[in-house]
Image 1 (cartoon, helix red, strand yellow):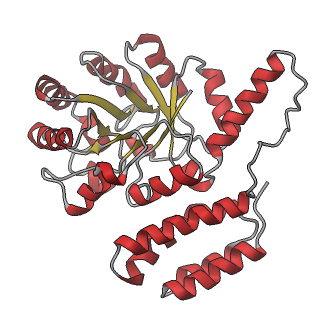
Image 2: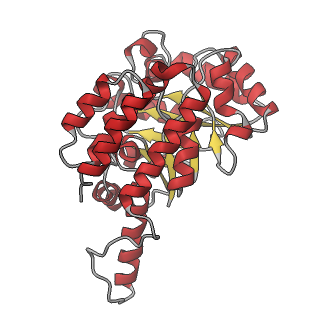
Length: 331
């Protein structure tokens, strides 16, 4: 199984990716938060620079409905050594959809088809697609899949929800199953993998999946990929008759889970502090991250509340020190 880190705007940029790769690793492909400009901004450029992504397989993602803009960015990315880009047809954000971009583009299948025809004809590097299964209804999926089948995709990453569902309700596994039955492309599953149990449920329903993309699950639990891989190793050992307990703990190095999480946190904090102007901007990024990291701890609420109110890095670090000292990690 291949594991991908999903692109999440404002969260999974190169500072986060480098800290994750250093402290956890196990990711086969990292996808960048989407690029939206015909010419990359300095922030976007910093995120894709090869020297900021050493030792990682990184795939830049582009969000646009203009073929000319897509091709301009793809050519610029090629100049930096990239051989594949990813087209975002999955973002459900209202501001994105209102401009017929992301998942909003799915409501215009004829325009989408013309767009794909042009970019696949002219793009000098490979193209993968990350998509939802429609804008309003899952019934749109069969027609969209037929469009995708016309083009030589490097990979098709499917989040089996429609745009209006955002991240709520059950995923439409029958839509993903349709793709596994009818698509000629390499497929990747994305959506609602937050625990090893979630992963097992997905792969039991669609055992031929070769890759999965995880976003929020990793942000909440950076060890998730390790836990999944350990579960697969245990299952393989049991299938071979090995005497392995199903509740066996994941093998660790000489560092505790909490110490590793703290090192991961500190690498992110120091990374942002080194490249951002002032405490306010750095703390904005860290506070956004704590929306997810807090779920690793037992009863962290009063500490997280103080984190949100912190106004300088010095005060923030005092609160974080207390949280790590006084709060236990969830089992």
